[in-house]
Image 1 (cartoon, protein in one colour):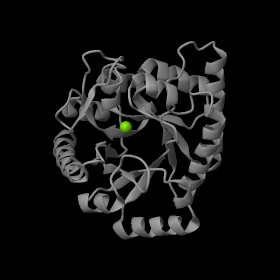
Image 2: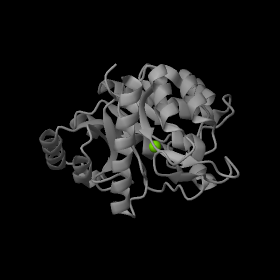
Image 3: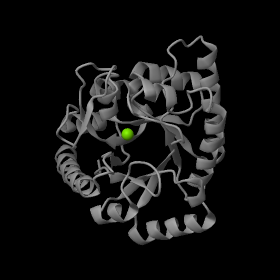
Length: 281
Ligand code: MG
């Protein structure tokens, strides 16, 4: 098996990723891009980005949607504001995700992704059925662009996510697995979750975290890769077991400290290269 490509989460003018020039300096193979603001999605911006990607040889593997009004301040605020789940902005956010799918097509990227939000647990409720319907609508729109939709993990347990994907019932809905989010949100052991999700996992984040003293009630703490409770070697070994062949996209969400962010991502690149060479030898 060949080595996994190494990637980093990037931002153009929105989101918590590193700028493109930092991705280039880090020497990564791939990037995921937080969808830029609408004014930065013009044909001119698109051709500028395509030229940058072409110059650096970096491939964009996913465009992540995010919305005005989202806040990750604490777990209840996240549940109330994030993704397509809050009913107030749901219709407008669905339209925005379709524009992000258009943007992904323009830059030649085959995947759009997002935090869907806290899906209600009562699968017989009208709200659950509506969220299934909205997700199906978005999946069909993306399918017309030849794209898959990836749901970022964190807000659901793995079995709930499997059930939800099955209820949506399209063949282009998959998972962007973030092991640290399972810990931060208190939604279950990341390795067990990865084994349950298996072939549904089509992209991953490499991020690390420590459990909260009250999992599911207060946030755990995000820490540099290798310093948390994920267990990076076990994580990569499990990715190998489930046959994962996509990129290892590093996420370190401290954009307020850009020098530290870059240095820690540099260490993460080295750690992943070392571990994957060992496991895939
Ligand atoms: Mg993530």
